[in-house]
Image (cartoon, rainbow, N blue to C red):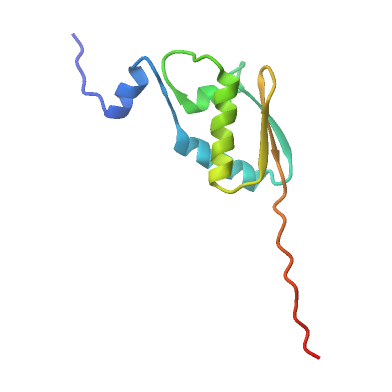
Length: 114
C-alpha cells in the first residue's frame, strides 16, 4: 500500500469540490493589463488541443463543474475590480472575452498667476 502525507491544499483538490487559484487569477489579470492595454482579448474557457483554457489553468479540482462560463467570468471580473483595472469580461459559448479599457490619466489644471 502506498501511503503518503498530504498538505491541506492537496486535500482540498482531491475532495468533492475543487478550489480556484485566486492568486494565480490576480497575477494573470495584472499580466493582461500590462501586456495588452486598451486591447480586446479572447481565450478558451476550457482546454482545446494545445490551447490551455482559463478553467483548466485556474481551477484545482478533479471534477468538471457546472456553469463554467459564469464562474470564469465572475473570478476574472473580481480580480480586475480588486486591482482597480477598468475591464469588461464577457463569455460566449466556449470563449472568455476581455476588453481592457485604456486607463485615462486625470487632467491636472494648472493655476496661472497673473
